[in-house]
Length: 485
Ligand code: FRU
Image 1 (cartoon, helix red, strand yellow):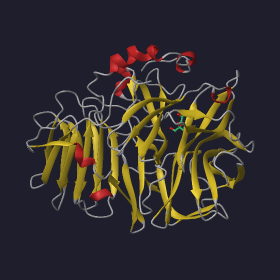
Image 2 (cartoon, rainbow, N blue to C red; image 1 turned 60 degrees about the vertical axis):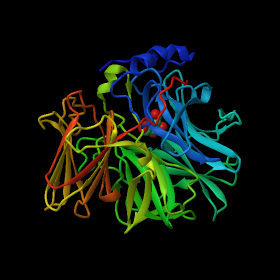
Image 3 (cartoon, rainbow, N blue to C red; image 1 turned 180 degrees about the horizontal axis):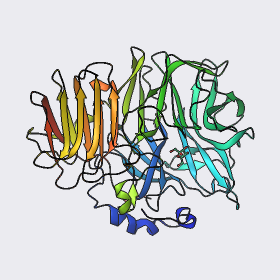
Image 4 (cartoon, helix red, strand yellow; image 1 turned 180 degrees about the vertical axis):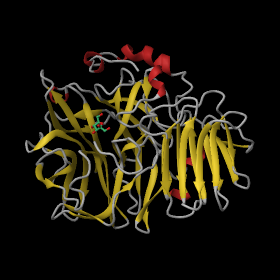
């Protein structure tokens, strides 16, 4: 793992040509994704500013141009007509003001009439490296460029720690107000969310209070990337609690959870119905964000970062890392969340392959699981050895995913084997494999499991329990990988 000095990590990009050699180096990597949004160079992390505006989906991601390191963060901008095909648009936000001199941190977007607004955290640090997080806004101009307002909307609360960031903006028609939810930490280091309100999107913001989530006053030390929406008349709250271990998550101290419940904007209380749930059970899933302006009131659309803040990945050797998940559709049924791959992704099925034990480098697998115990081993060698093993124990209704068998192992000290407790017997699996990621959708979206995976050339085979009906397709490319900065 390379050591970076602060100067190297926080170097400002003066000219795109400075990173062209990095791009030329990584573009031929065997791990570059074919249908997942990934960094043009360097590192991508959280999805940001995800919104539908005038028929086009806008997404930005946290981007550090210089390599696989969390340093100076930009927003890199991509667009899509259908959430499946993505085009590189270049830098969305650059740290070019005093108030964001050390990075444009995460945030959200919202389309209002003819305007598309973005809200982000301006990460300011002074010469003593003391941090001031500013809540800032920007808008999309007629040329499709993201332009900042001259001044931040508001500064941090002095009665909370320096960890106040990731503004999620929502419009509440009943109240006739916009709200901004900010991930935060109290002075005694408890995770929480701060709420601001205004009648207008760009002016008049005032502090409304701390969000109450009864029963969750002591749940991790910082709640990153809050997201709230209403689906089918129920409220959904998502955030990423940090600095705590949670049962079933190995040694990880970074998680992404959801609650279903009721949001009361009068009392600023989100009352969960039942406890927290993991949004995804995989090794590498974090900072998920839903899109704004989804017209259908019965669903949300969400993307996550395939990666975790403190973890390290094999492509760091190639000076890049990270990827977005495929977009997912979220629905609430029987008091829980169901997540399915974005509708229409089947257009990427270039051709169906014979189910003969060979895997394409990018594609989709569907399995009808027979009754009883079951096993699907992906990325094995030709003789069936090694690989990433999915095992289902029908007695305990547990899916276990074990990636210890793969040649390239990583984050061994955090976890390499995780369980997914199923509510229903396992009946179906849909897997999306790309060159460096694997996403499992179990039982039509009852549970999901996302992980990075870096098979070597010999690991493109699979084995499966006899009697399972398995089909697979090779996928075509759907993200451009052009050097646009
Ligand atoms: C989550 C996060 C956010 C922050 C951003 C910085 O991964 O830590 O809280 O805004 O990343 O890149």
